[in-house]
Length: 427
Ligand code: GCU
Image (cartoon, rainbow, N blue to C red; front, side):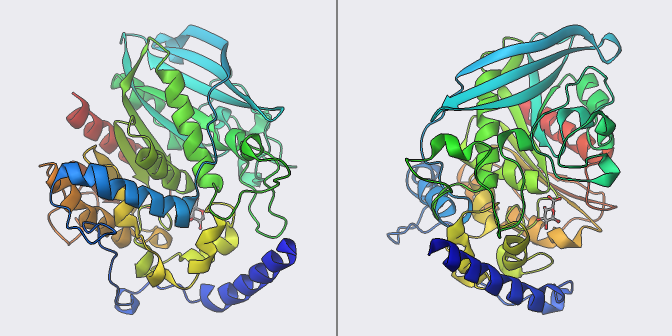
């Protein structure tokens, strides 16, 4: 019965999507009028005027609203069961770095989940601050270092990156190296840790035949459960959970300054870094690179990708409760400026790209702008102007923002700004 209902919803959504997807808005004059949900009025109607009541009253309310209506709640506790150093050397990257490959293992419900964490640390720093972020196709894709292990988890096919039959292979080694400025990061005195998102939850992408039988979800199923309940975690929330477990490991590693961990993500993984930063305030700095819909971009602008289009193509990312807002963005009790505000008073950086109109650069900027009143409650400088800065002209307050030239990707330019931003706030 549930299946039939779901299939009907899927077909309707697909039909509607076909009707509207050809008509994505790319013209400011077509952006509808909208009113953002109140950031600083509590559910009981109390005006929030200081950082204490933000932290005590409004912040938890907003976290719950996002859990119930966007990303879904984590239905229980699942801690790191054990970890094992699979490989370690003091002589990586031509001798300037330590490389560690750690297997994080989680056990529950007679299941085991194994996640490979790759870490590079600058050899000349005793306790390094560190960037952590997921990669899309396996740790071995981020650098051509031949020692990086190839994952065994399911992978999305991609001819260009050498993935066929959903199997990560040697062919993908270094294929996404241009997105990871490993040398710049190490030379700046930071470490870099990355995990393959598919180790935590495979990014299987259709709602018809949606598969929640693998990844982390089944470890927290109740008896007989086969998929998350409507208010339980989708894939983005599962990935966010994984970032926090990596941070649990960093707390145990004497070479890592776990109080200076910067969580970074691109695109769907940028949506993830934001949700991870919102849930886990141990992340010292949060960076979203071209995260767009369901990430930094304001949903109500409906510019570029809309919720309905995203949910149709990637129905597993958000929780099922979110489906009821497809095409009804104005009824959502949250918008994404509230997500950015959840980082306060910690530094948060939002990056857009000029040609990445699908992700709505202006909507990404405006989220930061509309989150700024919360930063002011903490006396932290935030975004003052409703006007976006020019191309390649970063603004760095406690909220950072840039729109660089070029398309949807992560570039050396992006990393240079992230390193500058981290230097500014962590030292
Ligand atoms: C698609 C999707 C976006 C997402 C992007 C990515 O374009 O529509 O929401 O951010 O993939 O993750 O690369």
